[in-house]
Length: 397
Length: 96
Image (tube, rainbow over all chains, first blue to last red; front, side, top):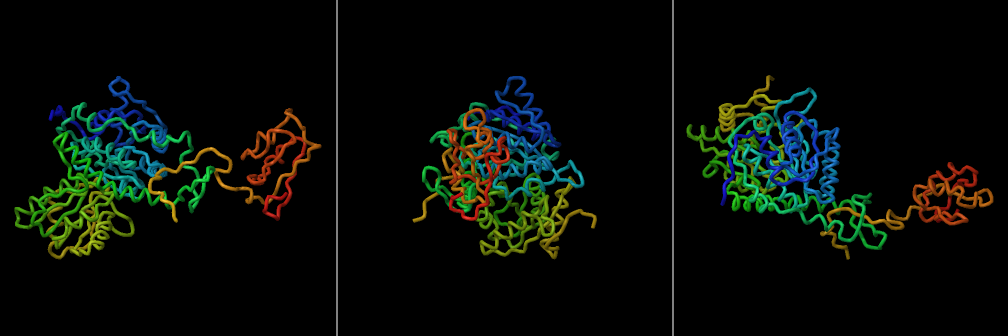
């Protein structure tokens, strides 16, 4: 298999490069720190003629999402990018995109949300949108951002669901590391042009997304059409099935490009682990360093890295954690008034699988507050002893 | 026998009479046209232009399709000859 060229890229540059390799046809994006370089890079590629795409300069993120939904509905491979308050500005349209079943890809450069203002990293933005019906994939490094953005179109177009590729602001978005740029010819082989869109209009012109009443109702031709809840069940069911599509797309990527990212979740040093750390994104990567340190100290600790947050790979998590007597969840978000969302989702999944390890949920790194591997080591050591079941790390309480 | 909707993922509709359902029984007031006061020819047609549901006929004497007229009253409001009045409708069976 042919190798691509390795360049020193930030995750933002990787995302923009990947979108270009996917030959996206319509881009509508509004700048917001720390996503801005993605929009600038893509605008530059279009202006120089390196990318044959329509670049819409919209006045807001709500319009950006509306524009790419429309473009996607008539057959274009469309792309957008945002962060934090920009993601929230398009919140209504996120629901609209999932309900419209458009195979969009959006990168979300994770940043904390206001008020008060922050431009620094945490994952509150995307995690707070977990109920919108989008597939959400979390990347631990820039190579994964490059590869996952490419995989995202394959997943989206197979599942007819929009995919959000999330990566940490500044930590990944602005940090330069070596990234292999896959060859265009291989990406073309992995990702042929869209064909499924023409099925929407195969019966002739139609209106999309009219008002749907609660129960099935006959249309003007006397044919029974689904009610709202039937369509919602279809969306949910397809989102559940997309877990398999995520896995298959990653396996196919491995065959063509020689790299794999674990599908829905990845394991590190879990082989004989008594205690598992569960995390997402670059924080999960730090947890692997902490796990290595803990192993040298004699603790049998491993990491379960969540790649797909939605669909939530409940069964696979159950299998991965079946022999862990203790779990430490580290996350950069919180569901105010309760606990971190990943921890809560995980506890639900473990309950369904009949597992009850001693689970500790920790909120760290909000608004860019640093969290280091040796701090994670201390948290895990406390958890394995008599540490609190819920804590905020490094918060001045 | 419940119909299998498992292949329908996208909500769609096609233009057609009554695509949104029978809306005539939503009326609580019904338009009545006085054909003597009405212009009776193409020199006006203001009610036809303004009707949001397209239930006024294009041909004269103008007729209103009471199966779909929702009784919004815009035709009565816009008619320059006051040829249309809205009548309180107690009976919901499309009888003005």
